[in-house]
Image (cartoon, rainbow, N blue to C red; front, side, top):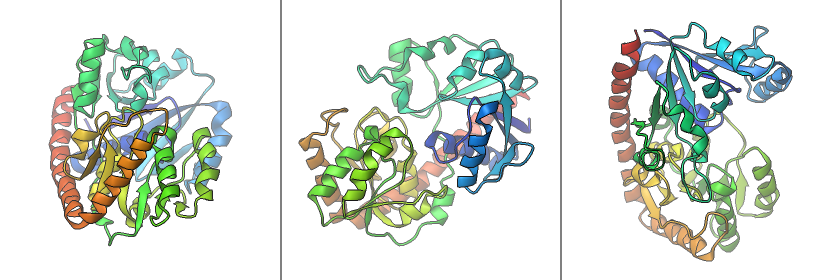
Length: 364
């Protein structure tokens, strides 16, 4: 097999973690296993003008044929009249193997009886209900289908086994770490938060920034209502700088000394941990979800937060202590972080080869 399709039921926005992971899988398969890859996005016809504007803001040109390229991977936008099952199934016609992630819920419903080989990637914390931290039951219909479900952490694998009595396959997430290695520079002075959202702990960082005017914080720009609710407050804090949006996040890591992942949710696989480690930036993160197994020795693991919904003083103090500890042991932690990323590349390449031999060659 030398041609694979990554099929989406929405636009690929190459600034979200889920979509960047999809692109990285494609790039790695293309680079290391000489495969030709294509993305298809099923988009309602009336969304096309808005999509064109969005891509222009990303400095990406949409051709008259509704195609564009991102990191060398061709993306085809397929206009559909609506999101009904028939329209979505037409996209999968004569496609030998399909890659979907958890955001493609409608598409997976439409393809339940599809004969193509379908690989479902489940990775986001959105799979967990706030009240009991259990995988959402709406995804259960796919578990008795003859398709393969892949997860990036033992944490998520165990969660599905516990709740649904179903065991997904475990594969290390396939991130293109080498591009972060090559961009590594002398650390800056800022403390970086990559995701400025409530469930990612932006409230904790904001409260700590007000308390510690001697520390400089860099917060990446975001999107959506939650970010808009926080933006004015973040801008009012003199020791917080909001980063400019870019599809290349290495500049943000270059300007940072430490990276924060104070998630207030069962965060399954924050790719920020791997990216920061590849830049030699120690990570300070909460012990939630799959973070512990990903962090390893590349930073400081904070206790599980007292609350996922309220900002607690104890959690602010724990974050402050973690930053102080990291700054006091910076050289050692930075070295350990970079070494962890090097070992991750080996783990990823082993998983990639196993993935190809297990799932792709069998469909040839």
